[in-house]
Image 1 (tube, one colour):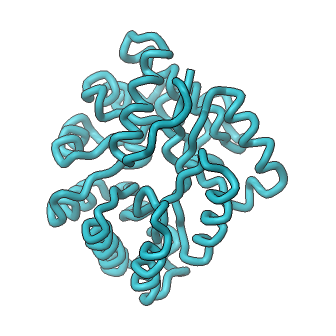
Image 2 (cartoon, rainbow, N blue to C red):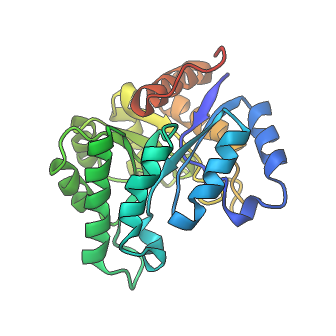
Image 3 (cartoon, rainbow, N blue to C red):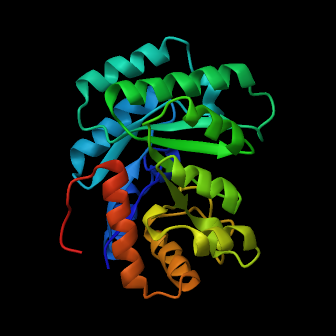
Length: 260
């Protein structure tokens, strides 16, 4: 089995003690490639360094809404300049809107979100989108930038919102929440969505899976996410892995990897 974890924050401090071992465990589990989204300008060089050490690590660069207080207005210009010198970039991300965390200036979030959508369209890159209690607003922004596609990370919206996202050319990033029995709405989304719209992720070190509550999440556990999707669709895990890997390659325009 060969899988692509489409969302791992491998550069974060939580992985400093054992990052090489985390990667070894992921590869041993069949996770051949990982997509690493950026969250702040200060961390872009760390992502670049990780990518240069391992060709199976794909990098995205962006300004995350939860780190709004860390972003300067000129970081948006810096992002454009960074992209000009880093052609290996596979997406703009992690970008988006957050309506859950208190104290985040909504107007400033919107400005950073839509400017990054514009940058993505200008550079012909997909986006990786964070949306928490803000999915309708996120979809509204996407309609203003037709042609921009990508992944709606950690999707937990309604079936109707899922269909709207698919109609806009987006894949649904499915992670740890799908492994919980109580996630009935998400289970329905997974059952009803086109198979071509599903990709798997962990969001490691966050979003621990069922049975791993309180633990640091790891990319190796994307295999459990894949199994949950396969069970919901009454498919073999291997077949689901082939589909989600093909979807990740298509939506992020990743080169063909090793034999699957």
